[in-house]
Image 1 (tube, one colour):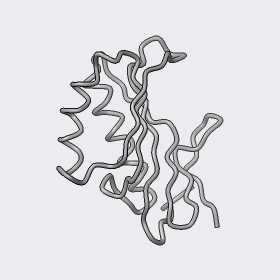
Image 2: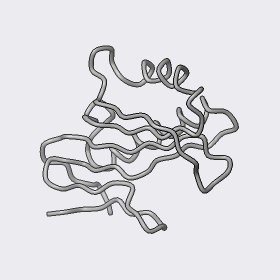
Image 3: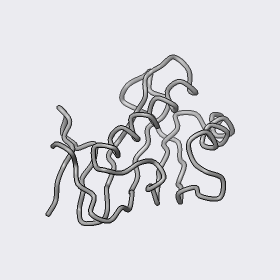
Image 4: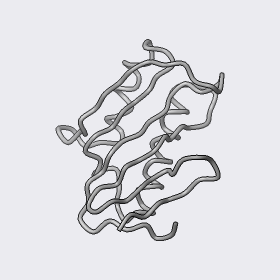
Length: 120
């Protein structure tokens, strides 16, 4: 069975398929990079909780940065959310975003046996 955590847009914030949760784009709000990435990670965690999981279940994460110069700050912030030596596999790249104020977006894959959204 496939279940979705829908958004008002043309994508789901999560799709649960078997033991995997495929996470769509998550972006944060704020004026600074630190505010935006922290907010995006909280949003990601909230989505995972709707699926009966949490950040520690992420096995693969992709981070899209507007500015590569934000990479060192991102590295430091990840230590606040992921346990040392238990980081997910990660790909980080740079891109332009449609929204001029957007500095970071995150998506990923989580693994959790019997994941199921609390609502869709």
